[in-house]
Structure formats: structure tokens, C-alpha cells
Amino acid sequence: MKNLIIILAIALTACSTSSRNENSVNASRGIEKLDVATFQSKVKESSNAVVLDVRTAEEFKTGNIEGAINIDFKASDFEQKIANLDKSKTYFVYCLSGIRSAKAADRMSELGFTSLYTLDGGYRALTENQ
Image 1 (tube, one colour):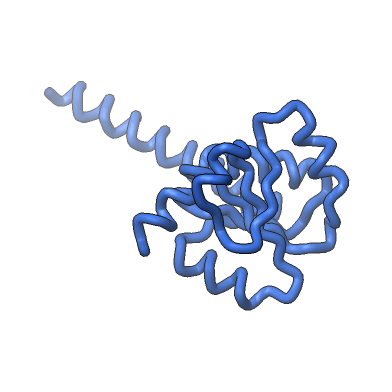
Image 2 (cartoon, helix red, strand yellow; image 1 turned 135 degrees about the vertical axis):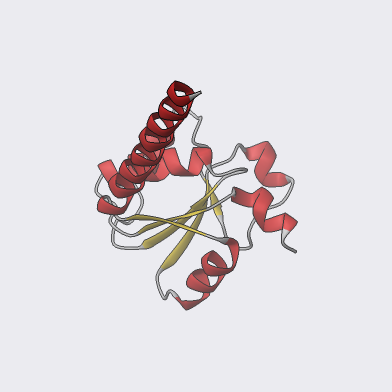
């Protein structure tokens, strides 16, 4: 029993350290994950906001954030298309659940974008909160 408790404590410590490191990496890259309310208010407050939907065209057609542009993260020309975007703007990136948008924002950061926000929980979280 004592060994089990020690193993669980080590596992929990490793998981929390990994999570902190991942968030630190994203924070150091200028990427911030926002909840639905904060995401929406920051989009409205930003004078140079670009809302970027990285879902497929089919997903985008089923519903999207008004004014969003659609660049499919899984498309072969994704990197080419984002490389043509204005790096001085503030990007609010979302997908269905938050996984693709996090990866897209990471790639954008690597390409020199400095003001990036992602929607925690993605479009699904947005529609569940309405």
C-alpha cells in the first residue's frame, strides 16, 4: 500500500510538471489559451483582431464565428497560407475542440507571429455556452 501511494505521488508530480512546462512553452511563445467569455471580449476589444478558424471547409460551413477566416490546418497548403498573413495583427485561433488550434498557433509562433490566442475547448465550447 505504501509503495502504491509513492508511485501515485510520483506520477501526479510528473503529470503536473509536464503540464506546467507545456503551458510555459506556449506562454513564452506568446500564445495564450482563453475561455469562451474572455476570447469573445478580447476579440471585440482588439483593434487589429483576426479570427482564424483552422477547421476543414466542411466544418466551417456548419457554423463559425462571424467574420472568421478559414484556413484548414490539415490542408497541404496551410503553412503557405498562414505565411502570407500579416504578422503584426492579433490572431484568435480556434478549431472544433482546441487541439488543432493549439498546433496551428504553435506553428504560427514558429513562423514569427507574436500575438496569438486560442479558444479553450474550441467551437464546441462556444456553442455549448450559448
